[in-house]
Image 1 (cartoon, rainbow over the protein chains, first blue to last red):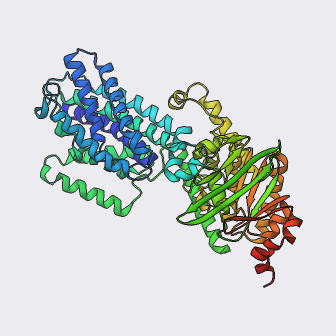
Image 2 (cartoon, chains in turn blue, yellow):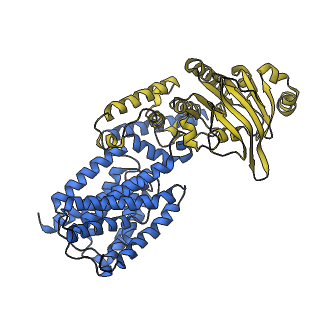
Image 3 (cartoon, rainbow over the protein chains, first blue to last red):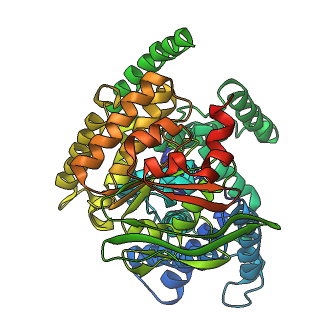
Amino acid sequence: MSAYTEGILILLCINAIAAMGVSLLTGYTGIFTLGHAGYMAVGAYTAAILTLRYNFFFIPAILTGGVLAALVAYIIGVPTLKLVGDYYAIASIGLGEAIRLILENGGKFTRGARGFPGIPSYSTLAVAFCFFIIMAFLMFNLIHGRFGRAFKACRDDYIAASLLGYDTARYRILSLVISGFYCGIAGALLGGFLSFIQPVMFDMMKSTEITSVVVFGGLGSMSGTLLGVIIITLVTELFRPISQYRMLIYGLILVTIMVIRPEGILGQYEFGPNIFKALKARAMEKYSSKDNRKTK
Amino acid sequence: MTEISDNTILSLDHLTKYFGGVPAVNDISFSIEEGELAGLIGPNGAGKTTIFNLITGVYHPDSGKIFFGGEDITSLKTYQAIGKRMARTFQNLRLFPNSTALENVMVAVQQHHSYSFGEAVTHLGGWRKKEKEIKARSMNILSRVGLEQRSEQKARTLPYGMQRRLEIGRALALEPKFLFLDEPAAGMNPEEVNDLNALIIDIHRERKFTILVIEHHMDVVMEICSHIICMNFGNKIAEGTPVEIQSHPEVLKAYLGEEVDE
């Protein structure tokens, strides 16, 4: 395998981990975010500083990065997610920018805007792939069970959810903390892959990119998110030779998807044996909606 | 002031709630005994749903107290109030429209048959057993309300009457001591209303819990309830047995008179 292909595969794993985190928050819990690159930055810088300055082994460094990002998510989530509405979306823009600026002005500790070179390149394909598999396993387990149903209930109708005894704010915060953890891990892996990080890599463009991949794949579909990551990452790479037109093509694809299929590629469906059940249920839906029309 | 006996499960004490300057609920007191099937009636805008919203913590009263099972629940949040084992349905349905009928019930059942976060992300430990149990209980409830054939169908695509039944099923899934039904028969045809009455009487009998039902159809309330409270413009105007209510002059004036004498 050439180094180039390997690089793309590693990037794919990293992007997928970040996108799964955002997919849980935006797709499953219905909270829009435009600042998740901030959590990636927290993870990346934590892992970089721990491995480089304190000689940590990379695995605990990556995990610490994730935990720290989750902590930041908790601190920002408690005041903003008790409120229902777009407060978090607004706050997330500020949060992403604030983290970037703090890193830029961190003096010797973060090395400021010049960036952080010489990070040990611990993110080999094997490491990135293992992280991806484990994180995907945990995420798919999480959404297929009581937490997945609770998140969806809070998303679809928070009043109904609270009248079923759910403390919806707690579930929204939990969802944000988990997604912060995922993005922190992804950021830490990214640092180990590039060996160099810089605050400007985690700007609003990056945040928008993760969120748009999730919307592109289908809000409320984890497998759709993975499919979206594959398509977007490959398209980005494919058009690298004509890089000045890359964003144009990227935008064109997003607009086309939104026009043809506004619910995203997979909508709310998941791959797996259940997709056949879903298709069957959909057929029944059509049948019964005909029924309804007749009786009306 | 209503008298409070040992059997009292719910009692409202001089409850008042203003919206702007308008009293939606004005100095209301009544109490419900355990195991009763009580009715709350009154014309549109009388404040019936507001009472439900006050009890379940969706709104908080401006003055007055609410006691449930001897405990003061006046200032509890919604999920805390529900945690005291009450459940309600809505006048305008509030199902999760894009989830299947089964998922709608499961999300309620899992509240009392839960497992830890660790088990949820690893699917180890008691996960499989608990999930099976949640599913089995949910299917039981669906068949209780006659929806077992439709379990995999999305809630929004069910016929209206079935959606109403599904909502009652979802409330039952919370295993409540007290069930609040907000106009369960709204928008139903007479045949569906009859089925629904039978269902309400049946579940009341077999589960022996307390039910308070808001209803517009006087005939329905008269038929199924033993204790009726009548409201108008936020005030309680009468309380008693169906016979007492039927002959109460205030009720006739406020409610029956206008409809019956047409």
